[in-house]
Image (cartoon, rainbow, N blue to C red):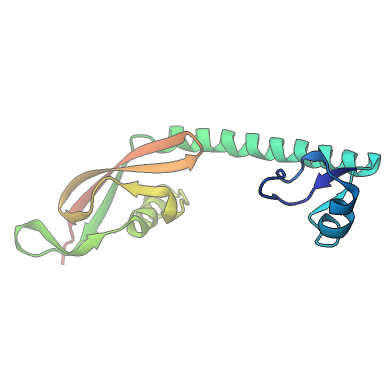
Length: 150
């Protein structure tokens, strides 16, 4: 029996795949657990439309990530922090603070989970950070940590 998988099943296939399975496996396991539906002409049309929409969505996300990469690549984000003698910070600068500085200085809303700092920022100075915007699309920025004026 031909079925369309609605969810990923280990050892069987991924969601959206059209596969041949035995009638009993389909009727007794896949259909009751809503893991698959019968591969009728109507259901096949629905799946192809969903795949086309998904491909278009991914393409648009990729284009917007490339555009954001061009804007963000090479910018300098300034973060002002309190520090003690010798330029040592009280604590450290995190990806969350970098994301907040990006939003306040450039209006770019970047999730803190997408920002990777090369090293822990515990002193004043300039550091490199990578923003992972999409699969294979990254932007490299410079984070300048400066003393806050009290």
